[in-house]
Figure 1 (cartoon, helix red, strand yellow):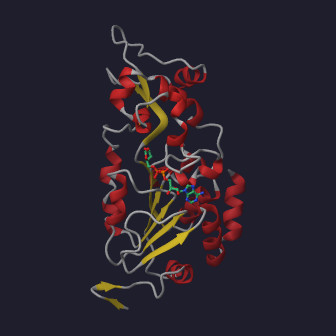
Figure 2 (tube, rainbow, N blue to C red; figure 1 turned 180 degrees about the horizontal axis):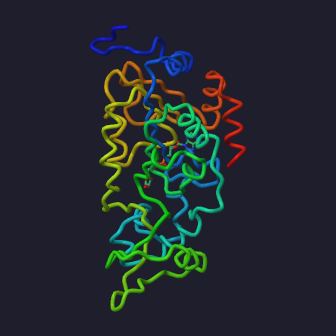
Figure 3 (spheres, rainbow, N blue to C red; figure 1 turned 90 degrees about the vertical axis):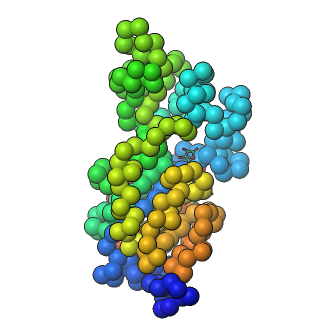
Length: 280
Ligand code: APR
């Protein structure tokens, strides 16, 4: 299929031809990109949805602007808004969604090359996605450090501080720095493994992007790093990024849990998907 300069891999830009491709020998290295939209059905609000998004509901924290809650300089002057938010976002009380189990299913079928996630809820790990295949590009609550002397801090002690609404202070002598979970704040470097995993995008023969507005870089730029002969699938409530501009872009608009169920059914994996999700 020649498409003004592009080689078209998929017969049609729809679910049926995507499924046919996924079952073919050509499809071996799937890269997945996740955003907050895949965890909303677990009860964790996303950031930018108009009514329910976190940024629309942070007014009570009296922030100069919503993103300040994740800015390192703002945090250094006033850690309270983040600690208040952390209490709501902290993992432990949320269950993975069907979409997280679908990512695990891709790995179970030896198709998952890498899962890049922007989410800090660790639900990919909780769903049983092999840890070596997960890149938590914006960090997570899995570890924490002093932002001044960088020494590590005990996770249970931090959890208790967060639950008690208290700010944790570094225990090193004469430091007195603030303790922050290893979440990547605006203005901070992304983890090393994010950068070392970029070649996975070049080797990908399918990209699946789910539940993200693709507004935050450098994460969003991953979607443009795949080769011209790598079909890209967007599973999202609305069209985002430059999806639709490539001859093999497949846009499946809707709730991620509904679309992955349709995809699993067409692939003959629906029972497996339900069994994996039941385990979570
Ligand atoms: N099914 C499909 N799409 C959904 C669903 C759902 N159930 N719920 C929400 N969405 C979509 C929204 O329409 C939106 O396009 O998911 C996207 C979520 O976008 P954001 O709220 O911007 O979240 P995300 O893209 O992950 O934000 C990126 O911004 O604040 C920073 O570091 C933070 O990692 C975060 C980054």
